[in-house]
Every structure is written in structure tokens, then in C-alpha cells.
Length: 170
Image (cartoon, rainbow, N blue to C red; front, top):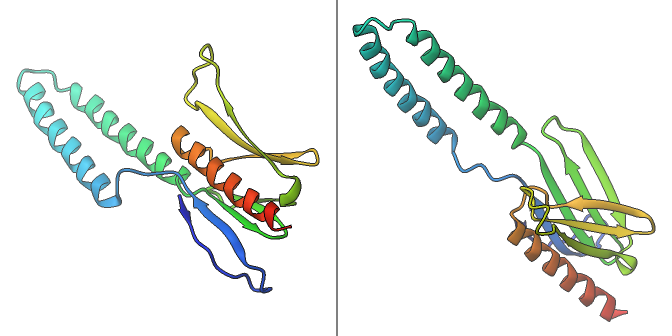
């Protein structure tokens, strides 16, 4: 998560700006090295299996390699999505862009904005421990789904602080 402060084109100052995107812990170079490592292990095991007469195993090893490759490619493709959250004196704007380039924009008036961090119960421990929702005047949007629960909590605190500061100026 990154946050920057910069003026907009219409001279409205950005009080808060966050660019959120899914974390990919494996770089393209790391992916290449992983695939080479897997290929090396599969070749060594395949030669060993062929030497004892189990040559059909080579086909399954090849299938394993192809499946790992496509799983990582699919993961990288979904990593192209991102969210931009910006707060000015007049609005909070949430822009969500999917990996395919589809853009959804939601704007809220910051004085009436409600931020809620909904924690999951002990009975419902899913992969997402909490969800961050901003809402106002019947409109709501979930933000920060790509963040870890602690990062969503931090984002909620930062947004709350910015909104309290903005409201106290009036």
C-alpha cells in the first residue's frame, strides 16, 4: 500500500491517496528460476524412473510442469488488478480496475462517509478475517480485499484519521 499527497488538476488538494494491488512474492526472474528448478528435478526423476522401466511416468512429470506453469501464469494475470483510493475535501473516490482493464468508480461525500471494518466471527474463520467497507447514502463498496487483515486495519485507521481531520476543519 502506498500513499502520496499531490494536487489534482483542478487545484483541489489530495489529502490521502492509496494505490492498492495484490502482492506477488515471486518476481518474473524468480518464476523463471523456479520453473528451471522444477524442470531439472523432473528430468532427474524421469531419467531414474525410465531406467527402472517406468517410462510412462515422464508424461505425468510433463503434465505436472505444465500445470505449475499455468497456475503461476493465472496468478500473475490476476495480479494486474488494483484499487486507487483518494480523498479530497470534496470527495472520497474509489477506483477499482480488474486485471482485464474494467474500471469501476465509486465516489462518496466525505462528511457523511462511514468506514466499517467488519471482523469475521470465531465460527466463520475464512481466508479473509475482516472486510473494510466505506458507505454513505445507501451506497457502499468494499476496499482493500487484496490486503492482509492487519493492512486493512491500518488502512481503516488512516482513512478514519484523514476524515476526522477533514471534518474538524469545518
